Length: 436
Image (cartoon, rainbow, N blue to C red):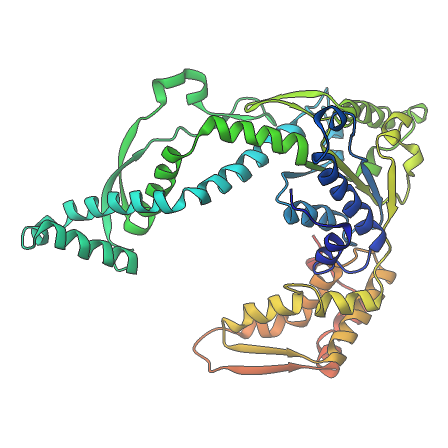
């Protein structure tokens, strides 16, 4: 858990999400409270539970992105689930505990990646030794002409320089049984986990390029150096104490049971989610996880339903409620110019591959923002996702015609260019092919 103050957290979120200060403040406080709790004695720590958050606001204004970036900031296990997936046809006790199993899986991968980084130097050296031996056997005719130490030293140098990347070799690798899904929508279970050691440590010969062989060797050598039990224990701890579960579209399951129809099912879904949010123990393949200290962030547009339409017990488990605002023209300008890896930057990088240097002036950025706001007002408000539609339409011609051995070309995009290329867009509003 990183020692960041709420102000520092908001500052870092500002690099990726424009506006929505109230929501950022709420999640920053929730994250800092986790750090504060971790510093307390165990007996007090057990009494302090996270204050879950519910976000209200139209699509595309940053609800999911705030939660995702927050988790990335502190390297916390994070999963996003759609509440509506539990209302599908044939819903009979759909496994809502799956979200916690997914969180455990995410935590395991996170911890394993960190441990792999720790042993990377040793694993790399072991993988190189293995590949040198394989290459030496493949080039035995050349090997016989030189002293063994000199020949292997030359091979190692060439391997590190990438000289043999595309050279094909035959190597023994671990035969990993493919996981299979026994129940639709259930957890994937490996054959090895059912039949034990019968399928473990089985090897097979494969013909691979040296590049592929090195990656496989690196992964296998890393596995040997890591303590699997320690990884599982750490993953369970991280999932329990640092995990973030984002439940999207919670407004779609809000409805009072006395209305009849599908609303009864919706209330049933709320009651299934309730024990998970309240605090229960879920069995995962890495061990049992207590959900008491997981931070739950729920979100929804709440155009039709209101937060008050959720069952009181569920409302009570989300004491912090924040409202996100629709994006303004100024917000769109900032999204295009101030965020890290903004859309203008992304398109510039993509087209630079085909020797096109994109340059947007202030007038063009302002006009793109104006059109985006106008389209959100006159058709469905899809927030910042509207920029993807507008930018794709704006650069459609140049993206289609680019490619080939053309010299570097600078394309200056100004207000006039935007108006000319978005005339059809602003005229007939025919965006269906660009909206998923």
